[in-house]
Length: 125
Image 1 (cartoon, rainbow, N blue to C red):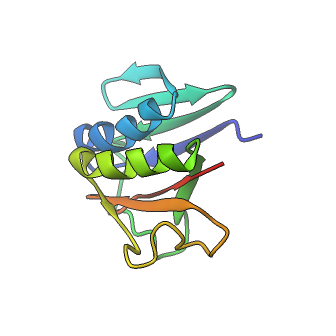
Image 2: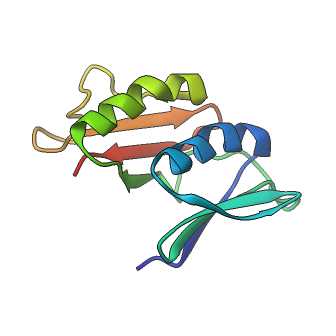
Image 3: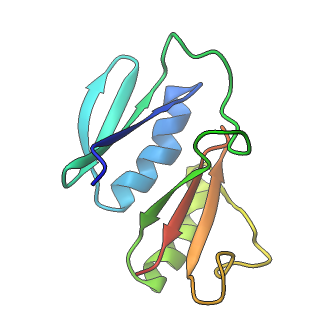
């Protein structure tokens, strides 16, 4: 089981509007908040989003490091609803021509990217 994941972001407000919306929509609860960050928790796992003063560059999911987070998103109908709502929260659908089977014919998911280049995959159970 993962204890926590920490994501450094260039703009905390944008991250809260996009990443925070996803976590809240999936039932995660705000766990901690401080001037440079916020975290959301589900069960024993939490994700931190922080604007660190030690940040040296922008995120690039195509370079070595984190490519994306894949999250359980409920039913296919839940994935469809979240996909429809996501654009209003700073996300764009990746691989639209293959959606919702961009991960293969037996994999139902939405691959979303926010303005800062973070990708989240919403996977149907």
